[in-house]
Length: 256
Ligand code: BJW
Image 1 (tube, rainbow, N blue to C red):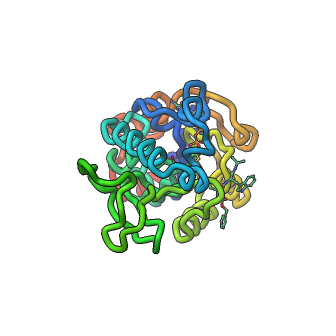
Image 2 (cartoon, rainbow, N blue to C red; image 1 turned 120 degrees about the vertical axis):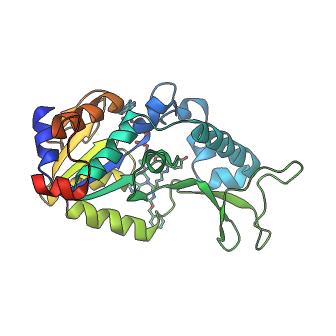
Image 3 (cartoon, rainbow, N blue to C red; image 1 turned 60 degrees about the horizontal axis):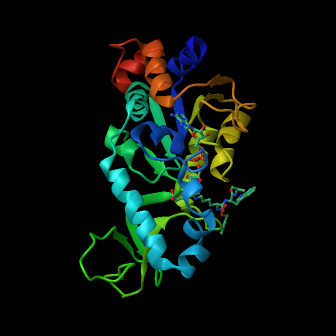
């Protein structure tokens, strides 16, 4: 922890890559852990275009239920610590695979959402983007596009679909140009996100993994902090900057 904290405190450019584990302590199920989302449903039904085509109503309801749970959840100390790091580091980019919006609600500003957001929908006709509609009694499920009448789908990325290109480009550019990449709460099995820490490492960045379990990235990481993110990240912030450490980018730059 002390060495990892020194590395982070000395860094001018930090990228964090997060996955479902960062929201676990907010009560949101991960995917692949025991009792996770995919212990309850077949991934082919809820995370592929074919699953949507086979039963659009069931898939929409599954996301509507998860969205309700996500909106009812609160950011946890891990989300808050990442927002605190952003306030202390000159150049910080948070890349998340999560769709729950908890980083933004914790105060993170530069957030790149690789797999979309549960706050958005888009139509299956011409791809019109629209905010997730409030449920209306008697309305069709899925709801219809207000512009063209085609069925809506969640604006998230399923298996076999391309990630948003501009977001990927921004994330890869940040990883190729950072001093430290923090990888938090991801099993690191889903591509292309899982490759981001390797991109950073190949360009000379230190990789710090925060995860209570080993992942394929553990062997690549320079520092592995093997405990829940809600415990590790606040401790990392405290070890790096102290309880009352510099809170503005300007102050932080003065220390580097
Ligand atoms: C804690 C904790 C605590 C618990 N603190 N930690 C190369 C090789 C092989 C396959 C591929 C490849 N390139 C592409 C593929 C195919 C595929 C893929 O990766 N397959 C592999 C799984 C085999 N990838 C794709 O299809 C992607 N698309 C693509 O590449 O397209 C190419 C293309 C180009 C041009 C045209 C067309 C196509 C798309 C991937 C989309 C993934 N979508 C999902 C659903 C999103 C919507 C939703 O959220 O519902 O994204 S699947 C799901 O997995 C979700 C997650 O973001 C993603 C990653 O999961 P994550 O976050 O890692 O969660 P878990 O549950 O796996 O892990 C949780 C971790 O937390 C664990 O490690 C715990 O230990 C830890 N943890 N408590 C810290 N308190």
